[in-house]
Every structure is written in structure tokens, then in C-alpha cells.
Amino acid sequence: MVFHTYLLRCADGWYYCGHTDDMAVRLQAHEDGEIGYTATRRPFELVWAGEFESRAEALAFELKVKGWSRAKKEALIAGDWKAIQRLAWGTRNPLPPHLREETGPSIPQDERNGGRVGLGDEEVGREKTVRPEVSKGSAHLKDILANNRRALAKAVTLIESTRADHRAQADALLNALLPHTGQALRLGISGVPGVGKSTFIEALGLALIHKGHRVAVLTIDPSSSISGGSILGDKTRMERLSTHEHAYIRPSPSSGTLGGVAEKTREAMLVFEAAGYSIVIVETVGVGQSEITVASMTDLFVLMQLPNAGDDLQAIKRGVMELADLVLINKADIDPDAATRAEAQVTSALRLFGEHPSDERWSPRVLQLSALKVQGIEAFWSNVERFVQLRRASGEFDARRQKQGMAWMWDIIQSTLQADFKRHPAVREALPDIVRSVNGARVAPSSAARTLLQLFTRS
Ligand code: GDP
Image (cartoon, rainbow, N blue to C red; front, top):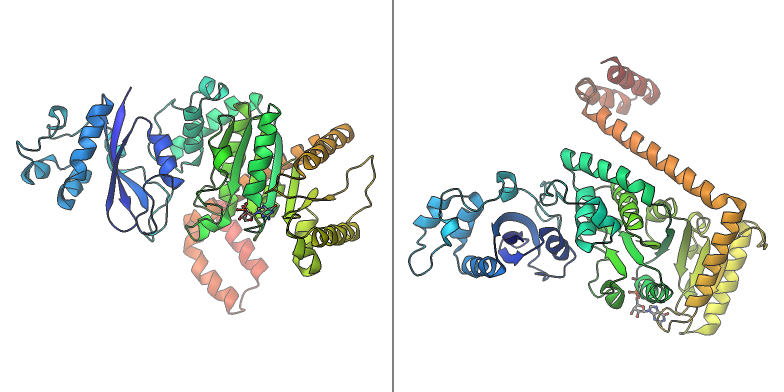
């Protein structure tokens, strides 16, 4: 077994030094904010890592580095072993013998300075979320199928990497996993911050595990790609579920566009399905486009509402309501009358939008819930089961998945083509003039688009 001692650069310019026997899991824990995280000291970039044969050696080196001056740490990061020696490591504080050569520890050159971790975006202009080196074959298919947590973490890291060679490995892995996917129920859950999503998912997750399921929770948090902060990133969320051996909670990828984050989440979903998770919950906050994204990758989309939202129909956004297969009025324990009123109002709003409920076909339903008191969870689940039963019988369940698969494929084609288009040399050269002409109303946008497309397709 190999142990690593590593250095992370923190948001405030300090360095965090630690050791681990699994870099991928450890860096994920940093990213999750479980280790080394304070308001000002956020580790966010892996700047150095070295290998050791035993934990004792790795720990000893960690302690040593912790006592080093900043200049010496920076010499280590730069791989400048002469400078480290110059900076007075002496007989009192010697380096381990195998680190004394000028070449430093046995790690590939690109791992020494590379492998940035997307823990924040304090360093403007830096590329974010390039994960640490993922060694070839680290995401073993059989380990994933056997639900080995490290293999899962590594597979997710691989999927989220932006390196082209990792992308090729990830594609190969996903194709290999594909025959083992598709068995899980994909559940989307949305609601504004504070509505009780994590309280609900924890209660639901534990109840499902009790029934014999394994539960994966994935999040899509658009705030983390915009601000670097995370609405869903509260560390105390789902405390019991997150430590349960039959649950796996994966936070939102922290950079990229919503589309990019969604793509990684869709892929991660396949990894967890292949690993035998029978319920995959995709959670998002009720802001922006993320609900549409989550509804477009799940079998059933649940919208959580607060009782008082029913008093103000403006709060019921038609577009989002129309996506909902189930609406939950949470915190019904606080004011049962308000919850009943809200239930009635949302039910009638849903009827305005759609059809009347009937037993043969599923129509969106509204239920009351107290996630905190764990009331209404069983009723919720029997509705989910009924939904699945009706949708499977009518063929709509499979049709929705097929539609989603196609949409996913076209999304990727579209975004890749668009990126290629924007990178195309002839397009880039012509673009500034064309933009000026369109802005100055000298060329019609449609004609400008055709000119640019011709430049793109001609070469
Ligand atoms: P999230 O931001 O949607 O994930 O919301 P949380 O699950 O973190 O819940 C926000 C707050 O509402 C927490 O203080 C919860 O304890 C509380 N809460 C959640 N569900 C209920 C509920 O059913 N009843 C009551 N009274 N409080 C709840």
C-alpha cells in the first residue's frame, strides 16, 4: 500500500499539509469541507504530493513539513531539492533518506504541480476543478460493480476530470458499466433552500435502506459553479445517511456550466446504478434552470413547497409545477391548517395546468409531509410505487427514459459543436467584425449566422 503526504494551497495563501492512503477519497473529503476547512482557510489546490511506503513515514514527513518555513514549502512544491537543503535542513531535522536525492519522491512530474482541486474560485482566472491525477485503470470495473467505495470515488473523480485522456478513460468506463445500469429508480427532488430537502432525503433514505435499498444522493447546485459557494454544501446535511454503509452522498461538481454539471451528474448516476444502488436521488435547489435539468434526468420529479407558499400563488411557478409528478407540502407539523390550505390550493393549481387525476393514468399529486417528524414518508413512498407501477404499465416509464437518453445525446452534440465552432480559427477571426456589424444594424443576425456557419463548414 502506498501512502501520500501532500500539500494543498489554501484560499488565504497558507498551505495545508496532510497524509492519506487514498488521495481521491481524501481530496473529495477536502472538497466536501470535511477536513481543513474554516471560513478563511479553505484548501483548494493540490500543489504537491509524495509517496511513502508506510503510514508512519508519511506522517513523519507531514509533521516535518508542517514545521517548515514558507520558503521551504515553496521549494518543495517547486521540486527544488537543492533549495530545501540550502534552507537549512540539518542534522536536527533531516529528510527521510529516500527523499534526499535531487529528484524528490517517486511521483510523476505532472502530479507534483498538477491536479488542482476545485474547492473554490478565489484565484480568478485559474482553471478550476481539474482533479488530481487518476492513475490508469484505477476505476476498476469489478470494484465498482462490487460497490467498493474507493472505486466509486475514483470513478466519479475520473468522470469529473477535464483532461482529454481522462475523458477517454471515463467514456470507456461508462460504456463498460452501461449493461449494469438502468435498474435503479431515479428520483429528482427540488425546493428552495430551507424547505427541508436534506431533512426529507435523510428520513426517506434511512427508510428506504430499512426496506433493503441502497441509496445514492447526487446534488446539482448551480450556486457552486457561479459563486464557488454552495447552497447545498452545508456540512451537517444528512449526517446519519452520509455515514450509512448503504448510502453514498456525492456533492455537486463545483465548476462548469449547469449543462456541464448536469452531464457529470448523469454519468455519476450510471456509476452508482452499476454499483447496485437501487435508488438514485438527484437533488437541486429551486432556483434557475436546475429543476428543469433534474426533471430531465429522473423518472419522477418531486417538488417540495412550504405551507405558506400556497397562500401566494405567485410562488407556484407554472413552469416548475408542470414538471412535478408529486408536490410535497413540508413542515405540515408547524401549522396543519396552513398545510391543508396549501394542499388544496396547489391541487387546484395543478388541475388548472393539467388533467384531473384518474387511477389509470398518473396525474400529479399533492401530499403533506413533516420531514422533521418523519410523518408522511410512507405515504410518499407508496405514491412513488404507484407512479412507477402505472407508468411501467402504460409504457411511459421507458418512453421517458428513451426520450431523456436522446436529449442527453443531442445536448452533448450541441454543446461540443458550439465549443468547436467558437474555437474555429476562421470563425474567431471574422467574429469581432461581424458582431460589430450586427450591433450596428448593418447586417441581419440571420445573415451573420449563416456567414459564420459557412466559415465553419468550409474548412
Ligand atoms: P434544505 O435547505 O431544503 O435542505 O432544508 P433543510 O433540510 O436543511 O431544513 C431547513 C430547516 O427546516 C432545518 O432547520 C430543519 O430542521 C427544518 N425542517 C425541515 N423539515 C421540517 C419539518 O417537516 N418540520 C419542521 N418544523 N421543520 C423542518
